[in-house]
Image (tube, rainbow, N blue to C red):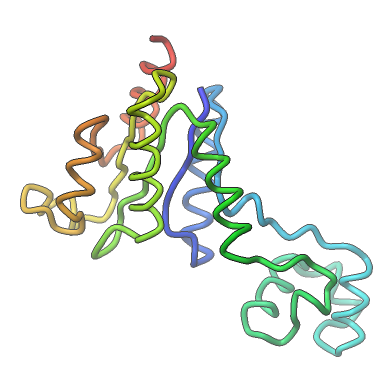
Length: 192
């Protein structure tokens, strides 16, 4: 069973949340594609030299901090560029290519639905997977995972979930608020 884990990946705490839940799936023998893991920064000594040379880090700080996180912060704040670190560009074409490959080879999608509305990229991934599922019997379904109490409390009113997106998920899966249910559903699909 291979799962594509969809969700908004724009904050460190959401990335951490998704990574932690992907770890739980992996502990259950489920292969997981997590989009942000495909863009994990692998720090080289050359990158450290550039950042030290720019005065953005001193050599003694290399051992005492998470250098990858520090460099990611510098990139996000625009204090250093991908070009300066000799990193390839991150373009819409590259993101689409990698994520589509993850979706097209997955048997199921777990979609984090938290927030005032479903993240637009997550909604797109759900839709693409649903289209693939209609033509491919190896595709099992979509599990929406919602921990946001605003959505779980008002779910019957569609709060936080566009009704079309909710309809797609319910057509081929379900929405749950307990990650144990996510694991159980995936293991059930895997045993089919």
